[in-house]
Length: 365
Image (cartoon, rainbow, N blue to C red; front, side):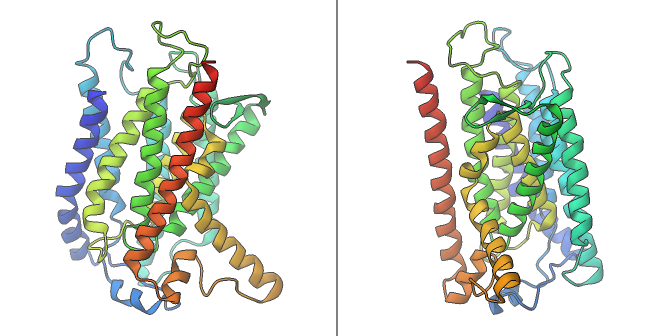
């Protein structure tokens, strides 16, 4: 637990103190955010706000992770801790960095071209597929040391579903679909100051709680032999990374709230989507993710509903999509939308954690 707390603190202070430097640097490089003309009128004031701020909390997460492992080495031998960076860490941080790379390329094209076109949608999807398949293969085939993979060939909800064995190949495809869904979901949510940042904090706090609970009730722990134990490969590792990311995001949110001094850009939103997908795979809670990330699902669905309705009926369901922009057009203030959507996100996390813990209690009886 000390390593998890220290990692969160390091991530927080790095992002809190480092973001102003990033703002000045990105401003000097003229890395300002282009704004679409179809966006609500109030968004024109955001034009030119430094983008690619995701680089700050990505760096903060990586540094906090390293510091966390340094602290782990000082723990008593009785503590069951990873001997060093693990394959789980590679999958989680690798997904975050590689998905960030896709977003960075998109942001770079927007900034250099001075428009919102960025990377063509088909190329985004191709790169997401490649990243998802690559890390899905690692997660389901590489055992390295423990003889256990990060992910599972079983579908999982609160833990692996016994009858849900889909095989390794289908399991890799599931990881790919998960990466595509989460990266695009977070990206769509990143439309108002602080909305995606705060929502991601809530989801990652949920995974921090799940991972640490799995570590405290881990089947690999010789002092814990209950029937309700968890088989996740490195639960303390996934808890450490979730804590590091939460801390870094909290520090970034200080500068990202309305009116934002910096925008995370696709660099940040894609990174968060990749990390969230990785946490779902590592904790064996893939089908729990839609509840835990309820807000991202709602916003993604609003975009899909709008698109389908327009294609089939030439009618719009919302004034504009995604959903948060609809409420802007209705007349809600940006701060009201963000806070109310955070409440919805928090409700999803609470429901997911309630289901997770209630299942554990049923296992004990």
